[in-house]
Image (cartoon, rainbow, N blue to C red; front, side, top):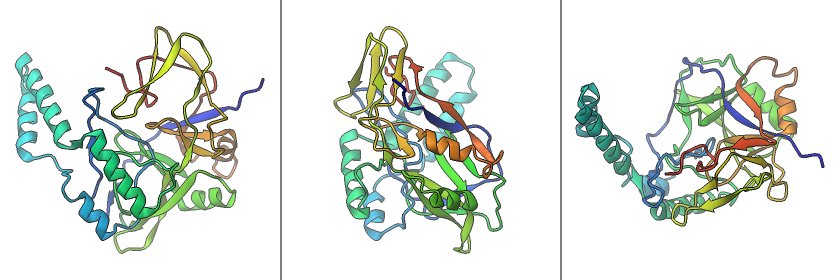
Length: 295
């Protein structure tokens, strides 16, 4: 049987001149799950670039996104210390910051559902904790040297040049919505921010000796087993989109068709991302599908 090849999109080259920010400093809260003892719940290319509505602004107003100065000063002081007590203090402050910026999974699910209702999102479209809300802004006159870029501290945002984005839409690529990044004078720039809307469920476990486990509180999926496990795309769960997510928290994946388009002469060498084949990939147990260790 011939299995479909699929690829994960990861950061390859950074563009340090590409500096963007949300027009409004508005974000969904993070999530901390006491059952998993995990935070860092991120979904790549799952922001909310739609215009900010008054109802959304009011919904997110109670949730802080800035770290209090007192916490930052304690963290800096602890990190400057060479003593083991300083390291312990830094870990403690890190945890306090994590909890300060986070809500429980139950609280986040309620916020997420409200966001979905307000914007009438498709059930397949994932919404990331810590997602920025509203359009992005870039400096006037910025012209990307790239056609495709993964950007951000964790490479969790996906961007296309305007010419590349228009080419993808003209080619009928699915599972992708493109939002203009604006200049400071309110005009569309030469960049699109991408939101991935395709979904492929859980990959099939090809090798024996492992099983999926879902946290009952945060609904995050993990693998259990005593050795690496081989996975393949479960085409019965895949919605057929060219750009898609797997599980609840993951990076961006693409189909063979999207891979061929991104490697076509039109894009030449300006694809500043890595496209790694996933079919038959070995995944380590005790990690979630976004690569985070399950404690």
